[in-house]
Amino acid sequence: MSRTLCPCCQRPKKACICTFITDISNDIHLVVLQHPSEVSQTKGTVALLAKSLESCQVIVGENFDEEACFVEMMEQYQLVLLYPGEQAQTLDKNLVMRLTTLDKTKLDAKPLCLVILDGTWKKAYRMFMLSTKLQQIPQACLPDYLANAGKYLIRKVAKKNALSSLEASCYALAIIEQFYDSAKQGNDAPSITPEHAGKYQPLLEKFKQFNQFQLSFRPENKSLKET
Image 1 (cartoon, rainbow, N blue to C red):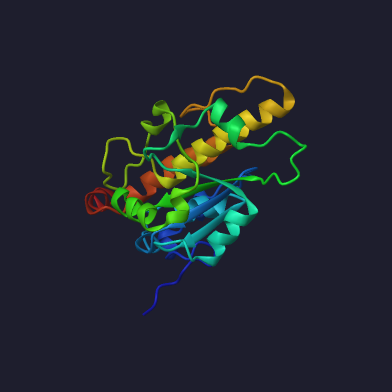
Image 2 (image 1 turned 45 degrees about the vertical axis):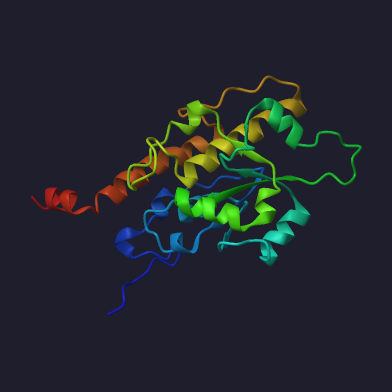
């Protein structure tokens, strides 16, 4: 007998994540390059992220050099890859100012687009190495105080406090948008912290609840609920 799925999140009714969806109008377009093994991963966070952000696109694959959707993104946007590679620069005000073209005299200026890789560290590395086009994109990494502030409790990760795709995207988008907006308005940008991530903070709070929801399905927690 087939299980009844939620028409919105396409998960079984008892595992529906719609209550955690938080509508956010992000200014910077987000592209998630997702490893095929993550598509059906119930502990993954991209489904919640994509449902919450107004401007978000998920492309599934391993090698994106010949992926039509990704090639189109490269033509349409100025891409920056959130990936802690050897060439990565810390995502701060100086980098954002270099990435976001504020010089209106440049008629060929393209809007900025953030790209992330969704997969385990090993699979993300494989995706990066297989795609020469990915290697040509400027790389950025989060400041250590954010990169080490992960609250991803439901999956085993390669290093302590590793961020989920949702957390990494929210922090990166918050940094880029707040520096870009402050530069246009001539104001000082407020600091982005794990507790204050601008308009993305409500989604990060929902993410904490999502963690607890997923933990409730573990056998040890089920037995506690039944006693």
